[in-house]
Length: 124
Image (tube, rainbow, N blue to C red):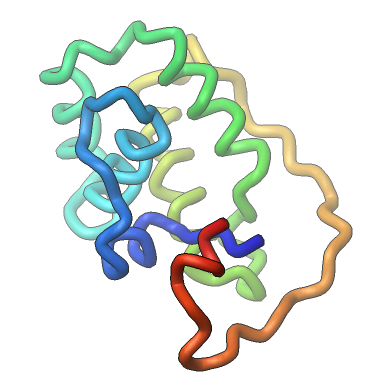
């Protein structure tokens, strides 16, 4: 299985709309905006969409922060950028609603992406 960070999903045209039914898309948009602009803009987007108290968003944010690699894990590169953006957003906007992430050891070996690999197959 290949997991894409917010920048990869955007670059491949696989990032859905912000505020839609798929909360992962909304949080990936927030991570992307946090990385490319700032956390305040990401926070404003979530506020304007009326999602500040959305239980699905809050739970999904907590889960994402528990599984994304922290910035110290350069091995996973861009995904660590999503962690940093979303953790900063959590601290700014959701610090009392979403607990601090609990980092767990992941036991897996990195894979090499072969150039020309079918994107549809890689996303399954």
